[in-house]
Length: 587
Ligand SMILES: Cc1cc2nc3c(=O)[nH]c(=O)nc-3n(C[C@H](O)[C@H](O)[C@H](O)COP(=O)(O)OP(=O)(O)OC[C@H]3O[C@@H](n4cnc5c(N)ncnc54)[C@H](O)[C@@H]3O)c2cc1C
Image (cartoon, rainbow, N blue to C red; front, side, top):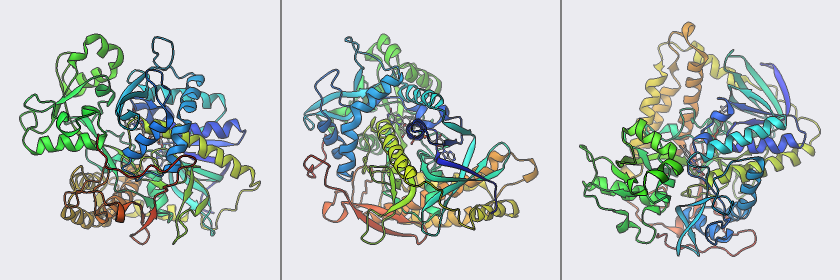
């Protein structure tokens, strides 16, 4: 055995909302649980979530969970699995009330109930009118949620390995997951963490793009480790672009701003969303608004001297409302755009924001690795939840506020599944003889490489390439060229070198190891996108402008080991209600 071994019931990789919700479940059940995180848990990207968490509480206007389900299916452009969507939307009210009881300080309406605001794509009676469904803590909802969950975990005695990075997954000869190889970042020591069950909750991978609202640590480590362990990645062509990133900086301006009444204007001062989505206008689904903005800019109606952005106007809301409901946004606008939104509009542009695809799971949080016609084949001992997982509730496009909900609903259900699995397996499955060898080879390659390429340079080239070949607008030619380029860059990744080894921090080693993950995510993205000859949700192809349900209502599975694609049917059967038939997605 190559590295020292430490043993746990459950290893959770990721201390964001999903990891912490699952950990709480396990620790409360008295299981020996450790959470690994590259950063202090409360610095995970969940902390940046602004706008809210959705639940059909109906505190402002009548609302129902099946309306929420309809909106989510429609938002997903009929690629979401309807069993998982029903599971999530039905449980949303109890999940939010559970957070409230844990101490999450939600904003309130007059009556004392939880405050709710409108959000893109949230409607009553199947699209008839906008409805207030997003429960919020000002514009810092994720911050409040993450701190609440962290404190609950401290109370439940969850162990934390802070500033530890998981490097690879360990599977035994039967394919079951039995642990991870991980590095303590401060010392550079590598350990094997032997577990009965492993959960990945490693968050998004927006850093494959040059311009993203995601934290720098969102490098898709969970996806990279999964792909290297021979498990396919699902629906990786679907990346959400948020309509309102601060132009030039990429920092997010929440949709909650439009929920509170903010509007988008082109250089003629026109509220152009009235043309693209006459009913809900600025509150159409994110892909619809992002494409409309890109159209305005392409057709010369962008603002600024380069005509490369549009404006988000909110001064008409009044200083009091901005200061009370959107204080963080005002701060961001002043710091990153140099404008005070009480007086001036904010320059905004569509920016990469969220990964709909990921590690394939069912709604119990169990990872599945389809083989042939066996689409539901489970990988024993392996679970995933949160943004790194694909359940798939978001399908081809996620509705705002459905991710925070996804974290707590599927974090909890994955935790429950793990408890059941761990309790029925008294003994740890043995580690394979060669556990850790693969990681050792990766680390040795990095130490011994000479005359190789600079990590930053290769990563920058990758990010710029993905940005221009797999952005909001896609064509066959752009994607085909992107596939060629990503494999050229993959060859360069194999030759990266840490310069001046004696003087560098372990963080430089980790950046090199993260690049191994980014490249897996980028390959999966380009190969999956190039193959899908239709437009659906966030995947909009100029050469195939229509959705093609006859041929493409299916999930993509990218297999890194063979660089090939297979497909898996969409779950069209909800758990208890009727199937929501495909319809044209207009807002
Ligand atoms: C700016 C912004 C605003 C958003 N606003 C909203 C919103 O209002 N509502 C909404 O529903 N959604 C929102 N989203 C989306 C939502 O916040 C994210 O999808 C969600 O928080 C992801 O949570 P997670 O638990 O999956 O991962 P994260 O919170 O990203 O946490 C990932 C964890 O994994 C750890 N990790 C990663 N790799 C490793 C490794 N190799 N080893 C050890 N640990 C590792 C990290 O340290 C971290 O603890 C927003 C996203 C962004 C970027």
